[in-house]
Amino acid sequence: MTPAAQDARELAPVPRAGALITGEEFDDASTPALTWVRENPQARVEDGQLRWPVEGTDLTGGGNQAGLLLHDAPDDGDWIAQTKVHLDLGTDEIRNYQQAGLVAHATDDDFARLGTVAIWNTRQTEFGREVAAAPDGRTSYGGALVGTAAPTMWLRLAHHRTAEGEHLYRAGTSRDGRTWTWGATWALGAGTEPRIGLYSHGGASPAAVASFDHLRFYRTRWPSDPGAG
Image (cartoon, rainbow, N blue to C red; front, side, top):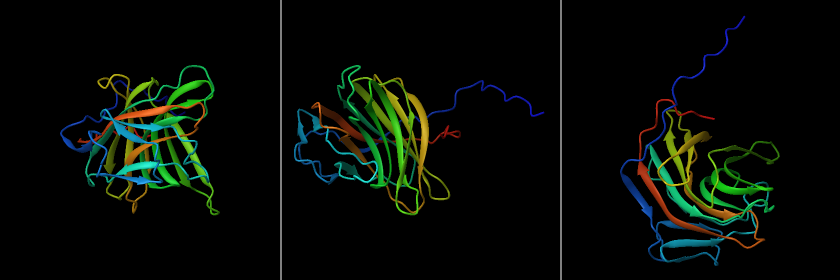
């Protein structure tokens, strides 16, 4: 008989942010390092924040009409992308599928996104992945939950490029910007050059506004055991 698996005795090592590489603090409206995909004219920078009304669009499936605000990735090394976002989705009310957060975007059918999201009467932090998996171009989407949702969330994607050229992104969430919960890892394929950015979509009613405080990139060292999911 196969012996029973041994319980883990130690937590898996987690990414830790080091020196700041670059970023956007939304101190002025120009944001030259960021590039729109399907610009939303209602999004605006004021009082040190990007205020972005949640769009009645999405990236999943065949829609591909949602706006994205993207930043070139720093390089092929190990780094962490971070944002702080406030999105009040209330409680209990069904608001499918309003959400906002971070995205690693290769194409509209090849991306991973980490955000706070309303799913029926729940509020979750979901790390989702879409790929065009079928020969006819139909997409496939799956997700993992990372931490506990709150109106204000700090979100991180820790990046590592493998020897084979794949981009690994591990998701971390925090409710206070100090204590982090790290979860699943999604891989984007070798030969892609994903950009990292922000999104605010999933449903325009009832009206909601996502407020982003920053988009920062920190140097890090990828743990020896990334805890891929």
